[in-house]
Length: 88
Image 1 (cartoon, rainbow, N blue to C red):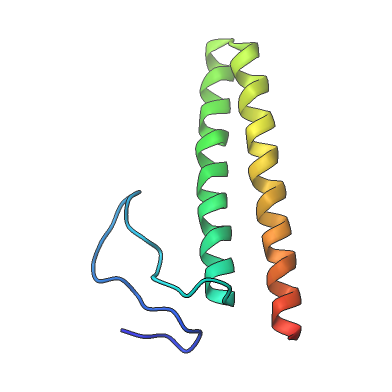
Image 2: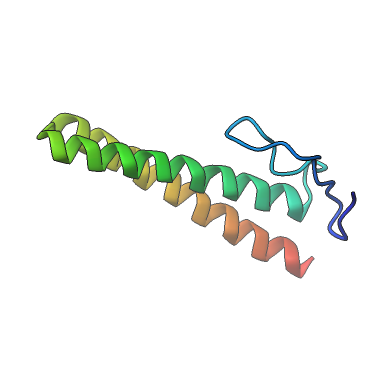
C-alpha cells in the first residue's frame, strides 16, 4: 500500500523489528520515520531510568538520563529538519 508522502506501509509486521515504513532516503517520510525511531529509543531510556531510580542505582540513572536527553535532542533536531523540508 502506498502513501501520498512517498512511503509504503509494510504489511502486517508488529514489534521492535518491524519497520515503520519503507521510505526513500531524503524524503519527509524518512525524517518522520527517523524521529519515530528516536522517540522509541527515548522511551526505552526513560523506562530504564525509572528502573534504575527504583533500584537506587544512581550511576545507571545518570547514564539513562544522559541517553534520554540525547535521543530527545536528536528527535527535536529531526523535527526541525522536517519543518525546513516542508518549506522546500
